[in-house]
Image (cartoon, rainbow, N blue to C red; front, side, top):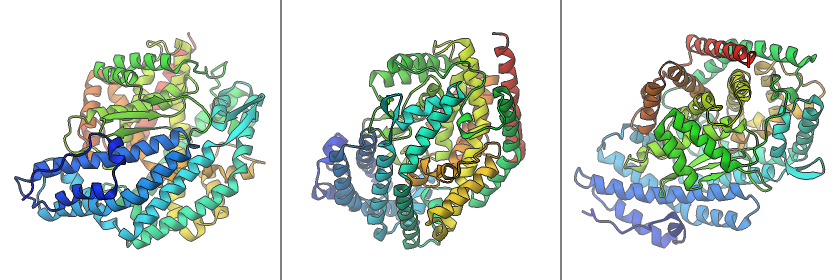
Amino acid sequence: MNTTYSLLPKTSEAFEQLAWSEIEPYYQELAATSLSAETLSPWLTQWSDLNALVDETLMRFEIATTRNIADQEIVQRQQHFLDAIYTQIQPQEQQLQQQLLDSGLEPAGFAVPLRIMHAEGAIFSEANLPLLNQERQLNVEYNQIIGSQMVTWEGEEVSTAALFPMLGEPSRERREQAWRTVSERRLVDRERLNTLWTSLVKLRQQIAQQAGYKNYREYSWQKLHRFDYTPEDCEAFHATIEQIIVPAASRIWEKRRQRLGIETLRPWDEKINPQQQKAPRRITDIDALLHQCHTVFNLVDPQLGSYFATMIKEQIFDLDDRPNKAPGGYNLALEVKRKPFIFGRALTVDDSLDLIFHEAGHAFHVLELLPIQYMHQRKEAFLPIEFAEVASTSMEYIGAMHLQQAGICTETEALQMRIQHLENTLLHLFPMIAQGDAFQHWVYTHPEQASDPVQCNQKWAELTQRFHPDIDWSGLDSELESDWQRILHFFGVPFYYIEYAFAGIGALQVWRNYLQDPQAAIQQYRHGLSLGTTRTLPELFEAAGARFTWDANMVQSLVDLIMHTIEELEAKAATV
């Protein structure tokens, strides 16, 4: 009976240098252990530490390949690790999971992780391992295509992402010019992305069938550990958004159209804040902005402020814009170093809300989980995404209340940013998520049709009319039909989308609590974050002071809160 294990490498960098023949003995020692009440704790500790090394190695590759998509040496190292090491590790991990399940032992706080292990066992297929690696490489290819999109703007070569702030320009002519410049560049890659998409859809259907599922939606429900709601629940949520939120959004769109004095709202009018007389202020000093964000979090809660100060000190941010940088934004947990890492592009002051505050919420989640001993109770792959996004989205609504105090912007700018952020919750967040989720439900229940990009284009145009009926796309058929290609989730993390809407419902409840009792709300918020996977998804919502529900009454009450707050902020802005 073995309860003494070999010493593991102290860093993931050292672990990456090992050959499989050097790694395999760690797994053999664990597999040789007879599990009992006495041996369980040291066995779990060793497995957890080994799992952390594997997880952090994968995360470091993810970070490196997105920070510089042109670095082929990193891509080759990643591919070597996936092919030579990770494909060997996955069956070993599955064996250890089954070993724990077969033991009948249930460590404290492991009910949910054990349920996840059952689900992962149900979808595991050794024949799928090379296909899953192939899928990862296609995701890297998507990032390379999008990240390399450059355009000429006012005599300068810039990334397409660098033009996004131009969509907030007061000059409609410049907004349209920027929008068309980006759209024309995207259309250049349309066929490459179509080819990539067809490969992904077919590959994912093959993965699902080899795992014993009829389609990729059924497979994904297990892969994403969706134990607390069904595909039918998602479709009902789409209908609720269409019935309650889309009409509320239409009222805001009409008000915006009138303020702009235009006949119809075009795609280049979607991001403009008609109350702003100037374009969103560009960020020229990211470090200074980060210190101002630290002040925000200090005002919200001294412990959150302390977390953010440490993050600044340890320089765990990559927020500038540069060539060969992948699209999107994220926070990833480095499980050996026990710290988060935030990636994205902070181009304007508005990005402090949608990027920095959002990803900081994810980082706070990582840091609140530090006291949890075992990797399986805290690792990102096991955390319910629906609740992880509550951690991040809550910080957008709460942090927005302290912009002026932190010196990020003037009172007028702060009011305008808050109004726009709240409006965008109804204009973009919920309708866009419903549209994207409905699209994916169609794709993966109709894989043969969805393998044809032309039919995807038609479905996307149909869903745009359903969830965004106020935007006039006339004369822009090609741009509208291929608009779905810009959404990296569809290519890289399929079905990871509806979580933002569920999380929006949770985050708005946390914010409502904060409006009533800031201190109590933050205590509940942090308590929910600290629980990891020791509770079910509904229990995590409850611990954070929210309910996991999206019924019509809940949605309507939150829409009313948003509309009422917008009216209050507009009245205040009129007097400043």
